[in-house]
Amino acid sequence: MNQVMSFSVCFFQDTGLHYDRYLREVVEYLEKDPHFKEKLKNADMDDIKGGKLAGELDFVQHNLRTKLDELKRDEMNRLRMLIKAKHDIKDGHMVDHQALLKQFQHLNHGNPDTFEVEDLDRLIKSATHDLENYDKDHHDNFKKYEVRKEHERRERLKSMSEADRIREEQHYEEMRKKHADHPKVNHPGSEDQLKEVWHEKDGMDPADFNPKTFFKLHDTNGDEFLDENELEALFTSELEKVYNPGNEEDDMMEMEEERLRMREHVMNEVDTNKDRLVSMSEFMAATQKEEFHEKSEWETLEQKPLYTEEELRQFEEHLANEANQINSKSVELEKQRQELERRQEELNAKKLGLKQAMEEMEKAKVQDLHGESKGKCGQMRPNV
Image 1 (cartoon, rainbow, N blue to C red):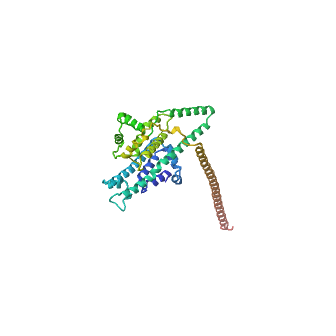
Image 2 (cartoon, helix red, strand yellow):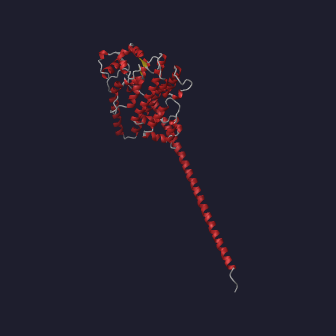
Image 3 (tube, rainbow, N blue to C red):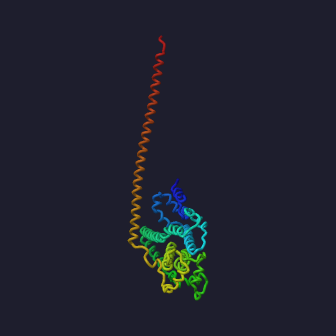
């Protein structure tokens, strides 16, 4: 079984986790990317378990990254469904426990007939355990992506002639300035930002802005909450001021990091009970705060350093150590290859010597038989 197949089988087995389907779908989509699949072939299970392949996700084709993001959002929708069910039970509403069991069959133990608040609490905690770290992991991976990108840029410069290097540096600075030249980005969740969505996306008169109506318009699934997906959709207009997939100077990876930062900011200010959902009451309370009416501009990624020179140095040191380890392994493997070749030559020589010895023995045996035959013929000759 090759490495890719063993990796797939590892994940296609039912883990018993509520996100087992999600894991399997992620693996399916990752294996469709030629670059990632090639890296997978050359990795052992220790590399996979140790997370060494995570950095390769930066280079997965954009359409597959988009699909992975969709899978992530689907999983968050499952979490939202759980939280909604918990609210319904607390409010005395009926919950279709059979529909929930279809999503989480492995929890059908002890109390197979109903879901209680305690059951949902357990599920929510297990589901949010990874999701709570998702943002942090995304930030960490994004920083690694930016550091790697800068490292590779500087390495390319080293290989250029002085004239080409000057032209490349000038082009780089032009692209940076062009990217930074964009309209004002409103503070996420502010009155100005919401009114812009109200006017440009909803087609409403800014003078008629009504927070309650706005909430209902953007509660697209009608569950009386704004989840993280619905919140992130509100920031599209602001992000489009800064990022365009058709522009050389705009990096879509940076756009997604910007979107996440905006959502984190709004959630931290508005989601007072920290259930990863914004209720109508939380939303209305936020619109009554003084900060809601402030005209401050959102500080975009290019306005502050994403990493330090020390972090870049550490990254390059890490790469150098990895390269040294690979070189050491290569040297050791070459020694092993040479030793195997030497042993093979010795074995071949022994085989040849044995073959020659056997041929000599056969020749001697034939000669002995021939001599004995002559002797017998002489003894049988009659006397005259």
